Image (cartoon, helix red, strand yellow):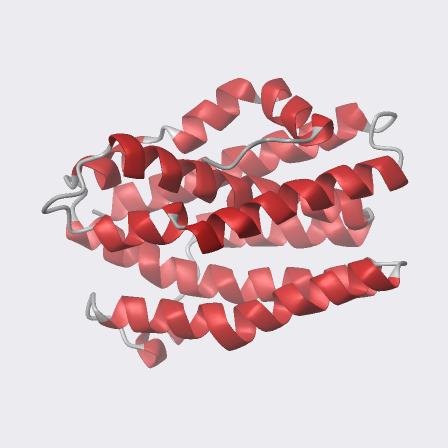
Length: 223
């Protein structure tokens, strides 16, 4: 599992412990782990996740603009490129295995839960600075790594139709992405007065975490 090596992220997660548990231990997640999630629920989630990724890319475009250091600009640009040039293609190929083609997903209306979280992330970045933006992004990035690692270790993988999804987020590549996000939070926190701003950051982190749980609930309700 991804190690929470830095102080600020660990404190944010602890300050929002109940919300974090409701998100990472959501019924949708538990059903992924034991393979009992209704397939229509998963397909609905996949389609909305495609739309989600588009806005996630926009968030990293905003991160380039909000950065005031060249290393942060390069990191944000690399993440933007990874989403647009790699992750979207991988997601489309994965979804094809579930009977979803890209044109169909692109034409889907956004669920209210998709709109709520993606716009919240963008608003956090627009109204605040790069630390605010990453604080809103972190529950998604790091939470998926924790969920993947937990399900890979304790879930039912043999015969589980969601095994590929679990192993994708439990894998070394994604765990590295999550660790880099934690390190980014720590670096930005040290540079941008994270300790003095902790209460506001914790509110942002908590809201983003609750909106992530709502995203799971969206999929569950669709099943």
